Image (cartoon, rainbow, N blue to C red):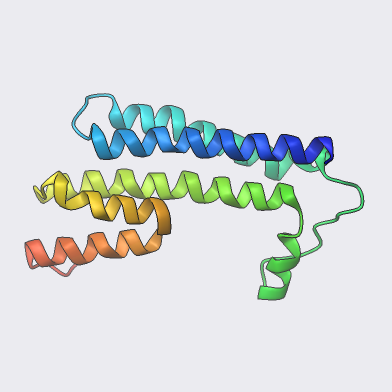
Length: 152
């Protein structure tokens, strides 16, 4: 296994475990004064920094034999982009950061509607595992509790 793959595997493990800290804070300590600050200012910002490094500066770690020659304009183009382990890792970190921000949004939005935290836990877990499905579950929950179906 090449040096770059060892690096990518280590960054994968580190970023995944680091994101889990944010999820534990959101799920277990939602009312702690520093939960959202720590989640956004530390966990999400570091994930965003690692993502940005991988996307904009990380090409130097790529195997010269593997070129990511793709684009975002077709499914085939995206599949070609994701042949690079660096791009796959960046994509994973993208999910980690954005799904965590969706979790923060769910907490903030639910507090405006006084939705009990225990009802949010399934939505947060679903967001952790399946991103958009968790957000959809939250919107359905919010609509069921409030009777409001507007999203403005």
